[in-house]
Length: 425
Image (tube, rainbow, N blue to C red; front, side):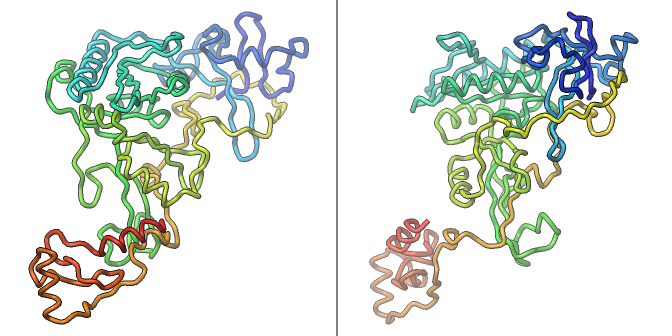
């Protein structure tokens, strides 16, 4: 990232570390250069080294980067500064990408029709501001805006289009075949295998490889089936995380694309935005079963930040008054891909949360009654009433009443005790 750029219209060099950008005679210059790309000329700002030498480090090290620049805030610690970053090359989809895009749209619409839902391809809102590849409307009126993304796209475009969709009561759902797509974790998303368009268009099963997760929650003890994700042994605390189906214990069946079309429109799968426990500004996005979402909120209601995607208001820009650096710094330090998202480890990918104590509501029954205080005749009568074998009769863990506790359809507590526990959640 650079501390200066060249303004191609005015023919001036801009120093982003100066309060007046090095041009006190142009008071509106900052507002002009920080205008979103979609509202200004793309080639307005140019890399200084490219301007001087006709070539720069970004072009040398990344064929997907252009010499044109955008201005963004960068916060390190408590200091926020302006920096210039290279824009990606604007490219048109190849014939193959277009075929895959078309095939995925047709598959989504076909799946929606099979579930009995309405599907509109290339749907637009009445004001024309939102165009959706496939708009699927569920039985309750829930609208899912599917975006089949097989060609390159910028993160800002993903954010802008997703915000516009939400403003029009459309839940965005981006599907991609690339694990490096800019849309990942920037909007509700799902990743599939990179298959030929013929496979996408067929009725063969198409599995969602990433973007769909399930809640896993366990007390970390020596007898836990899952080892401690923090020390590899056990720690005695409560762990909660979101895992891919194959990594759940027990393993869960993978979600198919066609299944996600129906489940998302029906509200059975919902988008989640889960913050990192140590830094709420870093989030993982995923589609999860609605029941898992509800359980998460009940467990960690006090830990969830404001779900708004708007960046927090900073304390203002710090101008360091540095000498203008004309060398392109692309690829140096941690900015190899010019991606502002922090690098996250495997533990963060599951949005792991660890607490020292287990929430009270997770303790299903406060007291565990282990002995059935009845006579042999009363046990036989209970077995007849319950319609189970006499050896399956046991005590309710709450009140001690006889219940079918050990049979194939056995339960842990009677209905009144279960209702009382749920009421205290």
